[in-house]
Amino acid sequence: MTFYPLEYIGKPPFGWQGIIPTKAHKMATKAVDLITSKLISVEEQFEKLDANGITEEMRPQLEQLSRTIIDEVMKKELSFVWRLLSKSAKDELQRDAAAQFPTAIANVLSDVKDNIHELLDINRMMVEGLTEQPEMLNRIFLQCGEKEFKFIEKSGFIFGFLFGLIQMFIWYYYPYLWLLPVGGLVVGYLTNFLALKLIFRPINPIKIGPFTIQGLFMKRQNEVSKEYARLLSTELLTSERIFEFVIRTKGLDPIADLCRKHVKALVDTAAGSTRKTLIKLAIGTVKYERIKHHAAEMVVDALPSSLTTMFNYADDSLKIGETLEEKLKSLSKHEFEDVLHPVFQEDELTLILVGAVLGAIAGFIQMIFVL
Image (cartoon, rainbow, N blue to C red; front, side):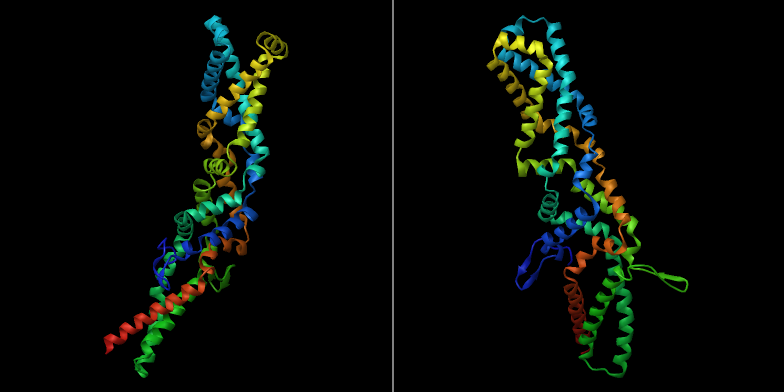
């Protein structure tokens, strides 16, 4: 009932939707605030991005793209000259461009890295991702709190049995039928109350003789940190999701403008200052600028599909999972509690009262059997 159903079933007030899907936006906001305020800085992570390493990874595709661009631009803008050139001259020109093209793309990535705070609202990206996909939010809490939820299930047997023994003795001396539903209500309330408290309390270990007592979740900080970091870094904070979010919210224009700037600079570099003057005299400034524009637009058109090849390498460079795990493990116990506690805090009273209501229903069933 904490996690499911994802959509409301029934007609208010007689219906139910899982507590997490109901409060998905609020819970996502709490989780993201913890992540961005205490665990990770997007600017610091992007500082780790190795632009040259990424372009090296993309080199085969970039070389092919540069050859295609040279061939198409020359055919369109200087078709007569291109036909007259020998194959070896064409190959040399394409090799020169292919050798310099990765540098232009590396410069684009470096500019993106330097301006990431203007391009990316990481809080909005994460909150939207978790809110729009409550099943992902469910999965994060379910997998990180797997042992705690199993404890809640098992504690129902243990606490229910112990409180049931007390109820049995009371019933033996005071066999009033109304005691069954009332007792069931009290047992249901106390069972859930204790189970929820024992997950997080005590926060710090307390020694009582040979025993050490500590909240179940608090004991598992290292284990939970590893799983939480893995889930976030593989399902939410991936370079592919970041790129998609930037394109969806800012459009392709900011990155496209960077591409145009560096590709045009590449054409100038490839032409060389002396050759550039001669080329302009030979073909005219307008046509020369048109060649640069045409080349830049071809790169922009190929950009989305080209970048998909670098996502895995970029994820390795960003090291988001490693950073998250390290920071989570270093949190104080009070701070670490906020990783899972919002699931219960948000509707803790509801969870306890549901236990009471179900206990009362069980008591009524007992009463019917007695009658």
